[in-house]
Image (cartoon, rainbow, N blue to C red; front, side, top):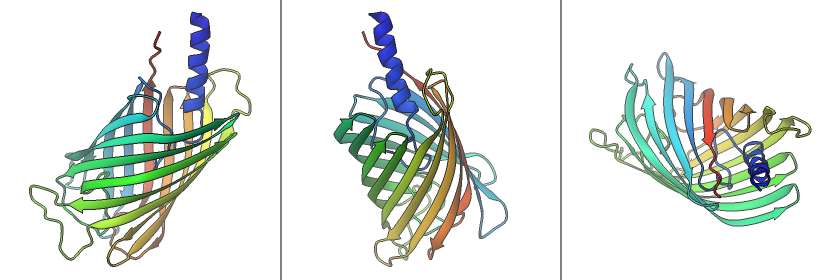
Length: 270
């Protein structure tokens, strides 16, 4: 019986971590397994446009699967914007999967999510980003379809920025609300056939992300290309490059790279 439960658990791990829907920049509609948690170290290095140098962000995250439909994540934001690694704030993220249709080698899922953030950094761009730059909140919907080795996911959200207390009031001349939208594609490139959960998985991903400010309609659209490694069905490494494809709003550092590390702790209940 124990061997059976372990086998089922390992197959579930493979279906979770081995899937090509663990996107680098966006979240899929799927959740992490119930009773499991992970730690993630997200890093980004983006070239400054208005001054010399690079904008480095470090974002440690901890996630927990409350049940199969609900997960929570806490994150903190550190940056070198003031020429030293500085704790700027943090966020709390909640995602609820409210629809799931599963078939052999495929599934379709819908989820709703919300994020609240606090940030004390200076407000230096028109782009609204509650994941690392602005205090505020975000509410959104995600749809994800997985067929065999390919996943496609799309999201839409409403985001609102507030003051970055205690020192920075949100400028009255800027829009404080925006619509975000994304389209992500991922494919499992290796292995061709599963023989063991210890096999390293290699996923290739492309993501397109956009934002339109509510009042003045200023917009950006970015493209991201990524390669992802899943090691021993528990560790994850992401390497990605993000490039601005269209932009008519003020953004301080739109182009750069991501390097993320993640480790998942799985719990098996008797």
